[in-house]
Image (cartoon, rainbow, N blue to C red; front, side):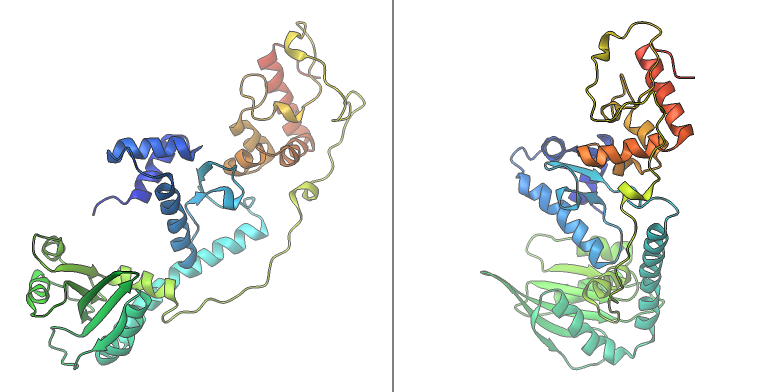
Length: 353
């Protein structure tokens, strides 16, 4: 199966460290696809459409953009839950994703149970209409193969006619002969679609590839069919759940305990780039967060604060949220001591006793 553009985007984004400017990512995709004029909007739409597809499936989205709190003009991979590991929110989210994945197999079992006449008429009509086809005309049910429906597709000035064959096969693999037969059916339709609850043989998939002066054949196997059902609520329905209330990160942790040597955050800070040797670092300032040379790296902030790596990256872009990270580290004596030791070693200073 050919790699989709959105898969190339994820692969390139991962190679860039999981977070990158959209413009930098666009240049990477342009070079790989040998398409120097690929529009910026094409990249952005590929990301948004993939997120929309996964949302409709009830799955976790792949990308985080400015719509989700990322810095404008940037994108990052959503590696895992944005909620703190072990929290009520993370457990509920995990359970919802488990249920949404399990319902796919329940749909598969349902499709294998329904009567073939229902599958080739009522169910097929709902699937075709969900895919955007109009004027669905179900042909006489015969159960012996051939054409089960004729449809029209119209979007703006673009129109097409298609013939459809439905195969509710629970064990058999759809062979290449079915593709050849549908391609050879007489008629004005320039497109053919085969829908099955099972799978297509490798020969059938190769035969379906478009050729010169041949009718295009699209294949919808059981997995794609289940995805269509989930996205369009065919045989399933979305259940609205009550909104979950949790403490804001700014108040979720106890206020940090400060000793007398620690000055207020808003006090001016002396220029510490010329710190004398042996100076003791007693204060973890917010501006030290995300500074791998003279402070704490992003990875160290994530480890010490208990926040997810992607969450830390997002919080470091905002002064208020950056303070949340700082307070989280300062509020834990062990984390604070480790942080000061790291900062001190990088600045050539002595850690506090």
